[in-house]
Image (cartoon, rainbow, N blue to C red):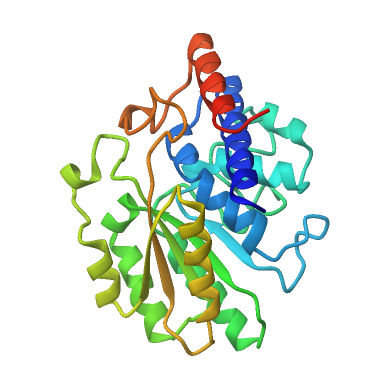
Length: 278
């Protein structure tokens, strides 16, 4: 896909996220909008999968550890045909397939991990990557984590294990937007310097602008080109803007969780149309 096509697709997904959250009258739109560009490249250009066969043995695995951002994952999975788009209208409704955090118990096609409680995703991803190596399988494992998850001790325990096991088939993606529900990550419990920390844990560190498609694509290519089974794991530290694409949401931590009014939704759609939606 050309960059213009990627931008258009990312903004279509952003609009779907806002419709989904507003219809549910509940959800976490800010981080989902911020990760849209990175996830668009990952899920439409990088990941090897088969939507008509979600349990394909050789599929690349994607784990959303920061599970509250699931509206963007659900929008992608629906768009790719994992399940009907009409399921998005039932988001967060009692008994519906798509709840506020991903659940394997619900049997959502394309969802590899039940997540929501931050911190445990990288541990699961490390185990999945190790299983692939032990079984001589070629799939890659990708795990999205938030910068606030780097406040969690378990994240760093998993990082140490992945380095110790030389899981070159594992790629962590850090949503570095300096925002969590109560304010700025840098003011609540600063996780900087992330590049040096991950490097100190023996990971290959790739730092990108999460809204520059050339850098995003290049980051994933760097991981893939050096993903030999005995290589160190890789982490892509993606500098993102919370609420990207909607002016009144950008860099405002209060949109970590929240619902747009009718007027706000109209304004958001108008801004997203100007940046790529037909």
